[in-house]
Image (tube, rainbow, N blue to C red; front, side, top):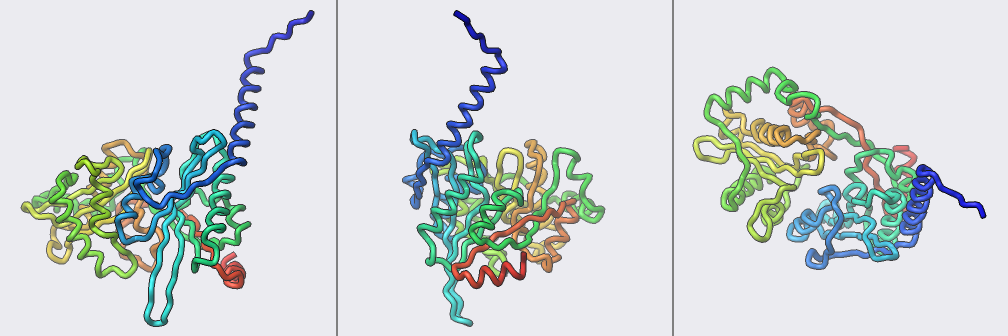
Length: 356
């Protein structure tokens, strides 16, 4: 009788093959459950902060829209991935228009051993099944890799529109070396005049800074600030402790708050979401520049590889004032795509003829 001995590399190959086969079966025989309340959310796998339960609960208590968390499970009841989607609406008097749209915030969060694009396609099919003809349009934004699910989005008649991202690399050079000569002088003069920055740690000062930020953004037509209660829940846990995935930085001058910024954090990058400075009341202290510099400095000290100006996404290139600010900080401009799907097929065909 012959005895066959398998080599170690052969055993490893067979194990990998069977493991991938199991993964493929799990991704094709899945069930997707949609959660609309933060109290019903299960414990989710780690992933991008844009798809976190923390951000879901922030949207739930804010005025940005109604959040939906799509969670995919395999046959054994284990989570494969999840996707955060936001329902928004707007009303215009002139012309009289009521718009309802669904915003999908990026690729989603997935297990490392699954086909992400395939599961993302299942998420899209579920969205169309539940919300088709109940929306003005569906948008997919904040996709880091423009090649991700390109064929799937084209298959569902999404229209790609060019957009841009702006970020600073923190791993290769000290951010001070990337500053322009003018901004380096502004920061030096601001510090000489007694301006300092630190992280906000108390609920009272966070609320004060949010009220100032609300007044600053009230005049901005292109950016909307969520309710202060939602932002407060984003920064502070229910037990009073501070979130580590979201921080607020305060710019102080003679005991007063003259600027602030809010930053979100993932494994390797920090994302500036909101910032303001009372530059008309304190022009010589450069509070807007110092608010951004505070977030950049903290990200560099904590070892993050990239710092992204997240509030620039979707901002027209005609808004050169803020884009020039990013250039002075040494930011890089990278192209990306926004995807749109309208409920009227003739609109999709017409826009595809224009943009594709």
